Length: 119
Image (cartoon, rainbow, N blue to C red; front, side, top):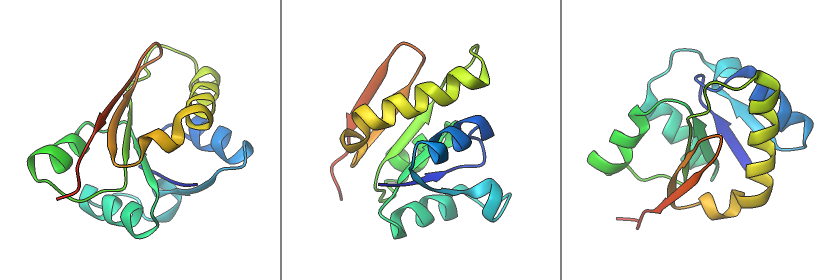
């Protein structure tokens, strides 16, 4: 499984996922400041899940109907960086395959998966 991490994702999450053995492409280390559409394109071209904390991706998926592999929106504020990393690894390991063709919202206590039919 390949994960594209938007630059809005905390470095602690990126490091924890890398350490857990996931292949990641981290926008912060690739090309800072690129447009969201380009980030989505990178995820699509790599058949990767896009991990982000940027709610604007919801507009691209739902309003603009842009094609995507899967978007995982992390809304995990108020916990330590270490806990964020552990949570991300645990959730991706347990549910990662469920996130394809879906827009998923992760909070410290919930996982909401909304399936999206391809156009």
